[in-house]
Amino acid sequence: MSTDDKNRAIAAAILPLVGGAGNITSVAHCMTRLRLGLRDRSLVRDEALKALPAVLGTVEDDTYQIVLGPGTVARVTPAFEALVAGGAPAPETGAAPGAGHTAEELADRGAALKAARKAKNATPFKLFLRKIANIFVPLIPALIGCGIIAGLNGLLVNLGWLPGVTPALAAVASGFMALIAVFVGYNTAKEFGGTPILGGAVAAIIVYAGVAKIEVFGQQLSPGQGGVLGALGAAVLAVYVEKWCRRWVPESLDVLVTPTLTVLVSGLVTVFGLMYVAGEVSQAIGDFANWLLAHAGAGAGFLLGGLFLPLVMLGLHQALIPIHTTLIEQQGYTVLLPILAMAGAGQVGAAMAVYLKLPRNGSIRRTIRSALPAGFLGVGEPLIYGVSLPLGRPFVTACVGGAFGGGFVGLFSMLGDKVGSTAIGPSGWALFPLLDGDKGLGTTIAIYAGGLLVGYAAGFTATYFWGFSREMIEEFDVDPEAAPHTTPATTPTDPTPEPAKV
Image (tube, rainbow, N blue to C red):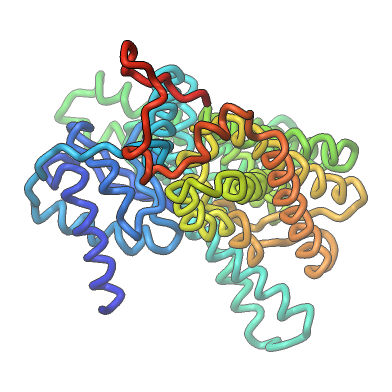
């Protein structure tokens, strides 16, 4: 079977299990997930969907998200969109529930916890952060590609190889970053309900070389000043100016007046205010990150690595995306991502401990075996929502592993060995090609690898010794396939078993 046929087969297997083409309102994807808007959530057959070999897990948020992994999702999404456009009937509903404490039951608990968190935390602030994430997530593939090329070019320059090619590689790697403000402006206007090209036009002012002739607050502006934060603010302002014009400009003049006023008003505000303010904020972010890791790196790394999984659960991690992008634009890499990536290492270590603590539960162990390769590559959702979160304690001990891994990387920052990533998105082993720092590449790789090992070991140790109570072992260390044949633990007068203690 060719690659295209395989991707079409995956898409064809998924579509009927999410209610068919008629149940799909939107299709998008990020680094690892196929994100679907659904008309009727009840038509989704979760268990059958999770049983597909290509599906690593599911997550419920503002959209229904199917974890396919990096690379796969980008290839399956076009095939899925084609099937949706062609139409497909909705399936018959109704899937047999699993018995006993199976991986499917844990996944259902994880989905329920996710849904409850979503309902509780759908605040205006959280919704705003989702908009910010939607602006930057589409840029991640370009950031990754250009970051890897930049790393390759740096290696060739250091080795003195291919001197005739390295300038071209530098241009390829740097072109996107030089114009990233334009893409941010375009996506911002699109996300906030304006005309995307007008947002891009206003943001383009920030990178225009001619701004160097303009003086603001006694200082000459420089091209790129304010960066992505300035572009974000400029495009949001353009959206509001455009919406105001749509309300008040006569329809016969709209095509001429609205775009002109939108670009003129928001452009002047950007030049004479936003660029300066955003430039100061961007500089403060970079200075603070450097100061924090230089003076309190171990403690900061411990806190960031330990709190990242809860931040993900609350949706607050999305606030870090523009900070990462600002650091990459300003310094060439973000020093925060390698520390935050340690949370995934703690999750992997915790999952391995769960595997050993539940030798009789073949269902959960199979889920862990299938999800661990993705976990090593930084795709943690299957382990989080399918194993550690619904179990409860192992989620906390996974955070402990992330804290120790983050503290390890932060400690070396205090000692003068910064570890950064030239792009956002990947973590785990997938981050190795994107690593950069202020010392040699070998030192940078060794520190990051050491952090992963510490995260694995701490997550495993904490989970193995403190991740399970005696009651949890009695409840979950059973053979689910044998459950229907055993004598129920309840009395005849109370046929309903007690709920699981998580």
